[in-house]
Image (cartoon, rainbow, N blue to C red; front, top):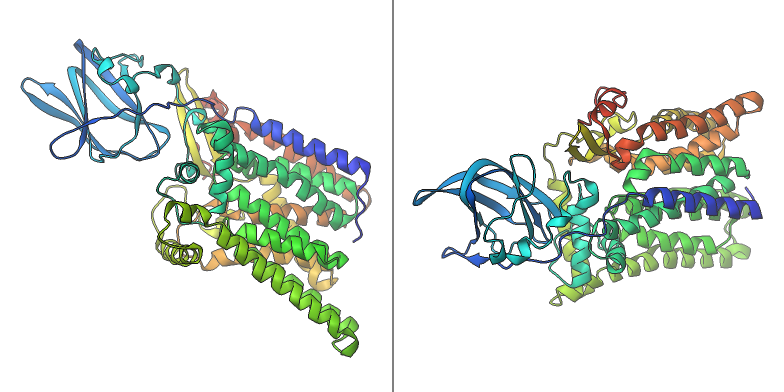
Length: 551
């Protein structure tokens, strides 16, 4: 369908993009976390230790340790018992980097010792809490100046705003390592996503705001794409607006835009792949092939799910080509056309993506110069294949692919209980309006594809199917966020389905979807944003389905 971009479309795109950016940016995270690292003395066995002295009979309830980019491994906590030491906590794992790690103590003592199994630990700050939860300084605090110099950064009730959550401990950390040329921790996905996250860290520093900023940018930039897709799909501004509102009020889109993981970044590139290929088959303008190839390279260099999307592009292009052959044939007069098209496809979808993917490994070469770019591409590819084949483990929030269709089990990213019976929760799941109405729209569009030979419906059905189908055969542990790109396509399926209705039926569907999606976004905002609310709200208002467990 021919698309005409008018002045009001430009204004609306800007309003949707800036509006989402501002809402997502609010309460994104702190600009300050502990920065100074304490050098610890080593014992004879090489382990690092901290020995603290307190006033006579100091009751301690908890220890909070802020760990830098290197995890501490196991820590053993002991208290002085006469001439000996009594172990009160053994084997406590301190594996959350750039985060506060809590160790319960509940002991009255004058001397407390911590022994870290990993000698390379980055210990940035230590807060000792008394029985009332108030910080208390040891009398020898000056012996460890960097451990007790940023006590003001601890607040009563640490939340997502003060530390890494969920997979930020991998992607945010590795972005920091790329930036500073440190050994790479997370290498189970291609590098580009972490490189892009590092831009926010370079500008704003290694803090929650800095490592999440670029994800807000990419989440916001999806608004123009979804708007333009809706406009090109239907030719009407009202459906472009519907697409933008449904995306902006989708729970998962909002949450992933505010967490430093690569999923929102690869989704942006995949949406670009889908849009530009659709733009090509609907207009036959070759520049869209180049843009589709560019976004293919960027998507695959961020996460291998870009390869699933590439399969979708291939099928859509193949079907278009079959139709074109039927129309103009393959003969002497059209030989130049087909030759030039094939050469363009080789350049756009093989050479360009391969070049981008290879260049994305520049951080690897900078940190590990013993291998060249191609060697890193191959060796890391082998590692990723073996890792994802073997990644099977029990997780309370893991969910099989078929449960994603019904929004059955959210993924809990963060939960922190606070004083006054309040809580901060962040969960990843979809807006029920989008998921259930979208599933119905998929069925309608599938029917329209075969019965009415609707090419627009066919493209959308293909896009959705190729992004879901691989997960049916994948046996690794999976989570609902891996359905995210499918949910974005559901938005387009819904818009196209509503646009096919007429009269009062169309108006009821349009305004009903719009109002319901916005209303549920407001109701569920606390559990997708981390907003501090009374626990009773999360317990009584939010759990609509049996597996929606947030407390």
